[in-house]
Length: 392
Image (cartoon, rainbow, N blue to C red):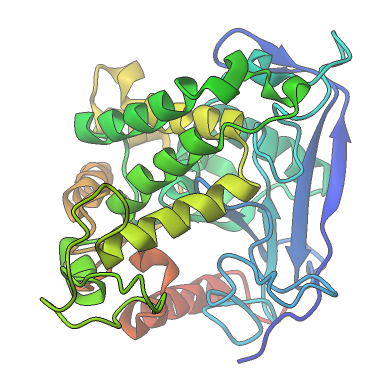
């Protein structure tokens, strides 16, 4: 297997307003996207990869002159990889409201000439899917071989199967859910409150003040990151090991029980050091308004709400074949949530493949290299390839 090598993002401008579920509309917006592989003559080998919360259109490959710019799912997408770009034409699209190129809160509001800030309209998963469909229209892709995503990306893939049932042959939903639990919504709100209560947030208009609500972003990321890891994974990586402040040693340098307590409110434990590092790094590149928007889109996603909570009725109009995967230690989007989708699809007599992977890494497992998981995805895409006629 090899990397895609250097890749380049592209932009597409849309003048026609996009009507949003909130009742607002967005005009003169731009979508950032990347493509990998070659679109075949009948445009039947296109696969859309939908991104999760802090990811983007940059799914695979690297940018020239930026050796550390590897795409967020580079282990999944590329020549000879489970989603093989020697066979499929893969598209990654940055969602509206993001801070990675598509129109978002940092961009200029044409109505005011100033950054949107908090005035950027609240968007939903369904709004993102509608925008993605418009981009596919311009590319001349009337039907995807597959739409795929993990976590929030999996919600988008599921929404595709409901909103545009004839426009995808396969729907691949990994470590996802048909709606968030109350606990998940609670975690998201705590993270949002950390940002909203940061004095540097300035009601969302911090751009004009030349500041960034870094403290809020740090805490938001720390809260979120805890939910991505399993208890077992944290115990194995960090346990109750103490940070050796004298040497600044890396995680794992002090054995369990070694070292001395500092009897203060700084960093004592390795897990504290790790979370603060993750928070600091996140606050350097992510936009606070984007974080608010995306977590709210997560909260609002509940396609069965329009059918009285009946997921089977919601999925009755779907036409795709489905592949779902979950991970045993993922307590944020637990296997039970995937099983609910599987049962609703089976009740509609849809063709479903389901894999529950016994992996210790929590929610983050969908981004990692578990061989069983990767091989199942590879095998499934082999079926997709055979179905569209292989090399024809």
